[in-house]
Image (cartoon, rainbow, N blue to C red):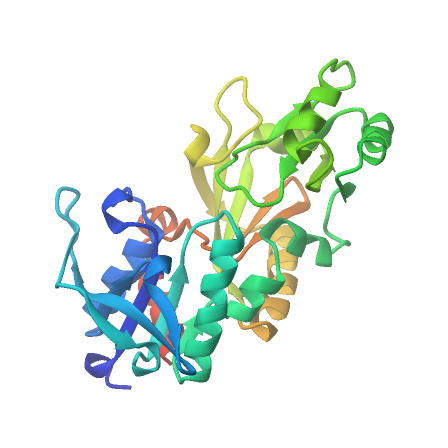
Length: 315
C-alpha cells in the first residue's frame, strides 16, 4: 500500500494538554507520519452528522519528537469522515454519554467508508473493566453491583477487597477495604452515589506488591514483554499516573495464555489495539477505550510499537 496517499484522522483529547514524552497517541501519530501518511486532528466535539453522513471540523496536523513543540496544525476546515482512510478513536475515558455519542457518529463514518480503530460499536458495547469478566477462568473473585448488602456480603466473604468505579482510568477512585474497615458504608455512598451506579468489587490480590502487569495486544497478538507497574510505597495503586514506577520483562507462560486467549476474542470484535492488566495470575482489566504503554514499552524493548500497530492497521 502506498502510505503517502493515506489520510488518517485522530479523535483525541486536546493535544496541547498531553505529556509528549510518554503519550501513546502521539507515538502512533509519529509512526504514521514517518510512514508517509497525512494526519488530521479532531476532538470529539468536532464530530457531527448531517443528511446521512458523518463529518468533522478537522485540522491537518504535523507532529514532532520535541517536548517543547510536539505539534502544529492548519486552520480548521470541514471534511466528510468517509474521505479518510483510517480514523483512530483515542479519546480517553470516562466512557460517558458524550463518548458514546461520538462513537455513534464514528459508526456512521465506518458506514461511509473509513476504517475506525478501535471499532466504535465494540467501544459502545464493552466496558474496560467488565470486558475482563468475559474470561471468568482468568478473573479473581468479583461482584458488580450498586446494592449495599450485595457488596457487604462480598466484603464479609473475602475480608480484604478492592472497590473501583467502572468508568475511571489511571487508578482513580480505587479503594482498598480491609476486614477491619469502619468506612465501608461511606465508601459505598461515594462510589455508587448512594446505590445509583454499580461498581466492581474484587478480592484483594496480595501480589499487587510485585506489580500490575500491562500487556499490549496488537491485532490479536500479545507483545512479547510486559510492563511491570510497581506501586509506590504505602499504596495499592500501580498505575504510572498514580505515582507508580515500572520495569519490563518477557511474558511468562500464564501471562501468554491469558493474553493469547483474550487476543483471539478481541480480533473478532474489531479491537486492533488493547492493553490488558494482570495482577499475580489474574486478569483484572481489558482496556480497549484508549490503551496506552506503547511509548513506555517501545524504548526499553528496542522496537517502535507505534509503527508495528500502524503497519497492522494499514496492511
